[in-house]
Amino acid sequence: MTNPTTQGGAATATPIAAGTAATTTTTATATATAAATATAAAAATGATTVDTAKAAASVRDEMTATAEAAADAEFDRRHRRRATIKRYTGHPSLVIGTSILVVMVLVALLAPWLAPYSPTRTNLVNTLQDPSLKHLLGTDQFGRDVLSRLIFGTQVSLLVAAWVVTLTLVIGTVIGGLAGFLGGWVDRIFNLFNDILMAFPGFLLALAIVASRGSSLESVIIAVSIAYTPRVASVMRSVALTIRPRPYIEASHAIGLTTTRILLRHVIPNALPPVIVVATLSAASAILAEAGLSFLGLGVKPPTPTWGNIIADGQAAITTNPLTSISAGLCIAAMVIALNMVGDGLRDALDPQMRRQTAKIL
Image 1: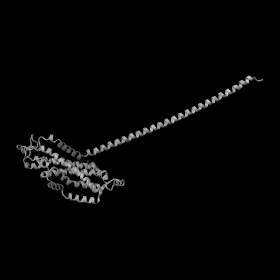
Image 2: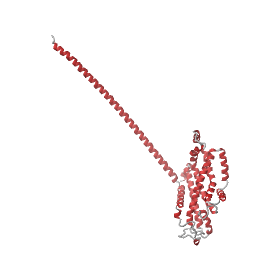
Image 3: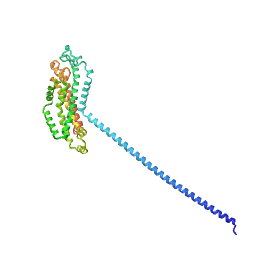
Image 4: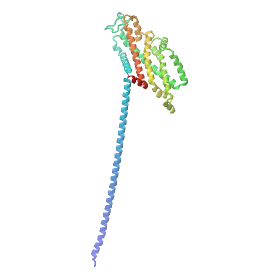
């Protein structure tokens, strides 16, 4: 016979065991869920870390590529800069001519301090003196120190050359560029007047203009500029004719750029190198023209010293003291040779074909 107490205890134990098992199952499930969540979180964290690492590596690669590109660009700029400097400094004529011009410019700027005497002060007691320690190149027929007059005469020659180059370059570039780029009736009118001006020798045309205006520094500058502007304008027109049919000019027309903007942005900048060379060579002709006009008495009025009137003044003592005329002639020759050397050097440096030929010779 079964004990009721035993049966009751068994009945009571069964629910407790079941509850314990359920609790254990729930705990295990929760633990498994937490483990799965932790695993997922760890996996997500790992994926995020990998993505972050990849993004950081990508940023580093981009920064490295940018730095390398910047370094390459800087190297290219330095290389081009060195090549440009070498192109100009490696040409003997350009270096020598520029050096002479720099010396002349310094002499002109420092004339008040370099000249031992006033260039216009006369001393009739010391007329036609031979070279001595007091007067290194002697004196002229008015007792003026020749060396002082030569030093101050550099100012006039450089002033004339600078103004003539500026005026011929500006006027010739504008007129020649318009004629070559526009063509048609503008080009025909330009050729008519340009041929008329170029039919006269430059010096004779300048002589006629100065004779009609009167002798002065302004008249000399205007006359010489008018005489030598047609040469610069002709070169500019020729270059503009070769630039006009190029594709970038047609593209500029297609996008609606005005004629003025095309001229200023494309035509003139690409045509400047040969024009600058011609303008530099015109400076040498301008110095010769000024000296010739002053020698004839149609240039700068005395007593302002110029190399031309110093040569004229030296005629009175050409047999006893030829150094007066010879020294002024040597100054003119040095200036003209220097400008021609600069012009030749610029032509070789700015023209690739001439640069290759010069490199073969040198």
